[in-house]
Length: 423
Image (tube, rainbow, N blue to C red; front, side, top):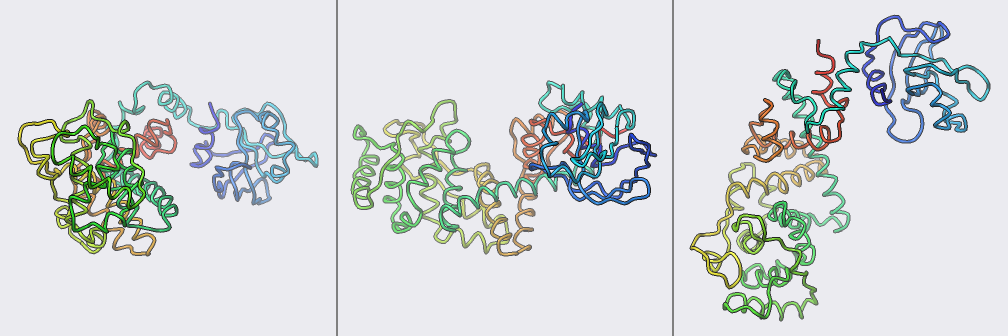
């Protein structure tokens, strides 16, 4: 038994009928109030009729009524206006500072204990998804409605991250887009390094050289720290020479090459390939952000990102090391990752900031057009009968796993609520 479970019972009023206080007065709950997640009483602005009197005020919840003193509420004036003390076990009468007894509702034996047993099973489960053996019972409509909510939460979370970057960059949407684009192209292994690279080299500086691919690559590779004076091939030597000039001109400070990861990844995802592909996107897509904002069809956005690394990389994965010939094209899977993690969240945020609901709706429609992601999370859900049919749903599953399952927040989960109260 914990307070979170009692909050859950109170919020959804999962009690047996005919509630009375410990002093014998009839309780009629008109409104449970609003949950308070900060300091102070647990629920604000509740409305409750006790006996013949209707009260409006705050509600405090504890496992034992004596917890009032463990939490030092007797010394806090904010708790003097509590209209109802809700407890699992009433082991001590609680009074206001005026010595007036605070009405108390004891919940022991007043709810279906099977809900508690299921909840405890979920909490004690060692599986990464506590309800793994029951989730197949969720109805299709309930899945879709919860997916919609989870996707909205995920977009809101990503929007808040972008807002912080916007504040830091003085509302430079282009710079934030460029940083997120670089981060998405780094995948998990080099996402942070790619974002660092973009931060060290403002997009406005790169756009001064937007008509010269060699200079764009020189700036990006030079700032990455991956150019050294030991290269043998003409291509990296030319890049290094150009970067030396531009570094002096713009007073740039390169990164340490040690931040880049090459181990345990496909060569096509090496940072050398990704940096060249990023350079080619900047070179070939002038006004990319504006084009994306103005484009309604997903396939048109996809075509804007359809690019390859420079020709040197056709037979290289690293500088000076020959490899079998192959065009290093940015694949559809990589483009979808960029769409999901960069373009769609920023487009959603822009629409939100401009009160453009059509733009926000477009982002959801695009997510529904993109194939679902395949990763350890989506595969785990698939193994227990919960399949994502598009990227909107796979993103919802990531939100579900990371923010509910991993944190054992079954009481806040729509699926958890349904399964806990299932006959």
